[in-house]
Length: 637
Image (cartoon, rainbow, N blue to C red):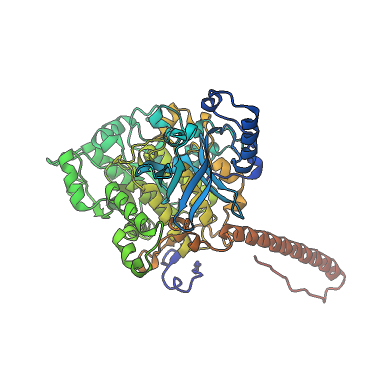
């Protein structure tokens, strides 16, 4: 039996992994790019250019100031406003006076009086809301706070004098929320060129082909080619081979938002599948659909290894019953023969949003040491992470150990369903644990299958109280990080990779997480008008590679999901606290380890060539001296 052994003593006895041959075993700053990819030109906005022409001295002073305190600009980034004598009220070191620059992409604050200079570089997309704090002080200063999506809260004060009296605040309000001001997000302007086109990372047909599809039981259908069957599903779908497109349309009428059960992943040996969908529209009267019942039977029949089908409903049973009053509901085991329904008790988006709000209060800006554990427990954040991971683990176990096909859904099938399918696939398929494979997983299970990123994140929208906002994708990435802690050699990517994805989830620098569905992205021509996040990441893979990675092909991971084995992701949630930062950036250490590994690999290859040459030489000598023998030498990395 081949097993991955956990390197952490506290986890060795509990975290598990299996190989496909024997499966009984268990358990850079967000806005900064490389120096050669930024523009240093200073381009002032039309608003500034339209003001009265300043005299030569003012221009000379402005140029001097720009050289000292202006950010390096990205392609198509332009300065919209600049205010001197602004005070950043830092919760860790106190008041810092400097210059604030607002561009169409970021807020840049710099204090050059400190050594080293203090710099705050904030993509405007990270801002959730901007609020004025109190009234003007006796010194003529006005204070305003920035509440951010990445846990931070920032507070500034500046004097209300002349041109700056209101402009810096208004400029921030305008460019932090472009959608609310009838403008477009910066991703549509950003014109950086990268060596690789990240939009070509994911091709649905190629990914299904990698899984061995189509086959004798499953076919690829283009019935949704123009998004007519379901406008929140991708154009390419995989369905049972014996269900014609006309029946798919009737099944669509019985599933919420038309989201029929479709294949996400198939086991390469047992042919057990992970399929996803939305809730059935049974209503209070228990309505049935013969087409839907036949369809789920076809999913079960496609797997010859099992005569049972598990339906995993992500919701609490109470909430699922309550959905009946709105026309929804869940599958009856009487109507669906040989199917077993399991509720996973994962809370809805509103509970998760409130949990993150409580977590933010506990971790930022300061941590109350005396009540840290009780305060963390009161947020229920790790409890939610545990339930999501536990649900994904049950799905992976049924597919892997039980060789049973599963159907996964919540209410609409684009939040909790995406968390469960993607995490279970990450456990089941080692390909998704590579850098490029993980990109495919995000593109497939989250983007193409219609997770509503625009609504859940609120890109460029000032309506911070919107009930559709929720940290669904953040929870998924948190769960992935928990798995990397238990299996440090099983993932090709490092923590910095996950943090970079989250930073650009909010930044609006790339087009990857814009819009709510594949149909919307096609309509908005997102791929044509913006750059993919994967273009940026794949252009500098050494930044995001885990030096401890070992490619154990076809291993299944069974993480431990008990609370005592989960921990708060300090590297993300508390990274803004300078007291919590490591003295040396971890990803920098990773790069050094990668270089050392490459050096050792090269040395091994040289020794292997030397051994081969000696063996060849010895063979020729042996031809003349038959009594001489040589022991073969094998080397392993």
